[in-house]
Image (cartoon, rainbow, N blue to C red; front, side, top):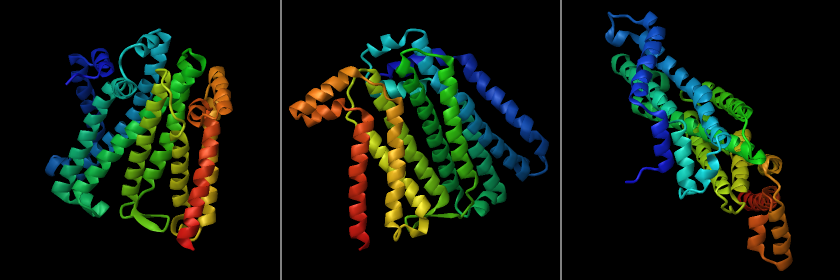
Length: 356
């Protein structure tokens, strides 16, 4: 199988035998330095305190690495390409938008992923030993150790993809507006992702074992709800990055994904706000979805570049009655408002029929 050329390029740049050996050595020494004070040689696997400290330290290290290191590496990738005048050459290559998207997303952070996966492995092994010798994890979470480890793995990986894709998307959007690059773009993108990360990790920190979350009158396990939500939003972030990459490669996107994302976000948020009242609060649900969706439609109005050529073609398409061509050249914020309005009216009508 032929390796993604963008990923292969980053492997040459980021990976070496020395770095591969240096990373586990430094991380191992750092984790042991923190956890060694709690080790009890007389107890299996060093005792519960040692295993708990090792698991907690590795999870915090993972989160900080993604927020402070991975986010900056992802944002710097795009800014560095533009600053070094290599981005135009890449856009003229035969690499497709999807290959360029995941190659740059994974490749620019490949060394960060290496370190994070080491810390994730330490965390999972520590919790596995903790459960094997002391049955502590299953008692705390109320579920099997396999389910807990699965939730942690999927949740951490999804959050990593969400944050890194978001910061790379923010950096690409910022750079494309001026067709130039500044190191400030990296810092701004990273700050935006740090705000998202603090919000997300703050919500996760408040979750307790066995806690239930009502969402539109349906009750879900809080941890699973958080994990699935992280996966879904990570998927949206990758889709957004891919469509941004298509724009950079001079491809045309039909302006439908952002309105769909706005509706999805509004519906997700409305379910949380309404909770157990979701079945009876149809009006409030529609209001929450509408306000959220309309707020998100103003994001492209601020960030989208005004293209005079597209505006001229839009006017010509409208005059000729060519709806498909008009959609391709219309500013995203206009299409977003129209499609969000149609979606909200449709949802309101469907819910009224459902609950009447």
